[in-house]
Length: 344
Image 1 (cartoon, rainbow, N blue to C red):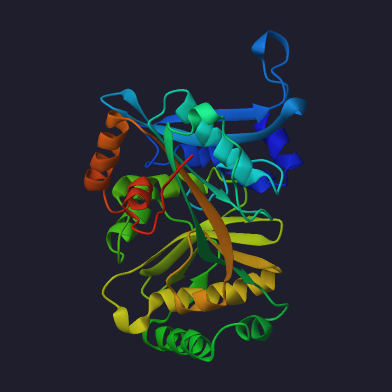
Image 2: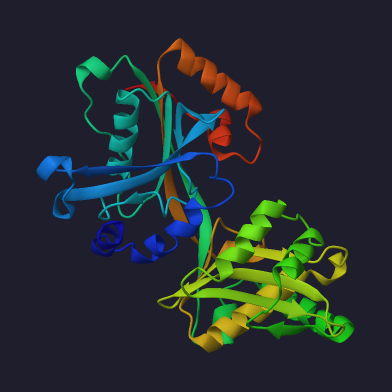
């Protein structure tokens, strides 16, 4: 049903990888929920696809195996959270968050990639106006690099310094380390995890294992690397390809070689390879800290946060601010000093 909905709303490629996102280590231990929004229920309460205008996927936090009424988006890019026609996705997200709090949720955070809409703001019943606090914010994620038909045309879209570094560090790695690009990597799970351990900013081991396992399950998965002349892996990158788009989900670079800027070396090879493949766009999921980010087209994401006005919700909100790790997205939103709260 969701696959059919995603085809009608132009989000089929996002739906293709939903399974592996729901199985990510960060979402294990939480309860996945699907909210369907439409005009009717059909026979015996069963939803009828033609009546559904939107679907929202999110998770509820659990403590000791029990849901605590705190719901949050599972995808901070907003691409795999709200499935609805372009132009009404923000409204669908807000209606879903409001429905959750109406049914007893303490906190509901939903992120949605904007697709034409500029704001939300549903008319709420007068009886609800004293029950909730609502905050919204819009983020811009530098994410998409449009590719030219040639490598020179693609590089021309980058800054002068970035172009120079892409060439310089690649030549240095090739001369000193014998670096070569491997477009399709084949390594064992153990080798992959060992590479993660030896990389700068290694991912948690469970995340690394999940990334490797996904390589065989994701439709159109891509897994490339850069290897030294002695067989040592210098860099690896993974993601997937679909309809002329290459999505980069992660990259890891061997630690201890800062003078070679292995991240830049990989980007140099990757751009050359993707141009040769006829790729129209490279999408860096979650953005990138690389200097090429200045040439990326931004994706606008709306975060909608609704908190029930109750002593318990206030306590949960304060505890979440204090005890969520820095990497936790809900904790980041709750700690954001720029959030402007208003009564619904």
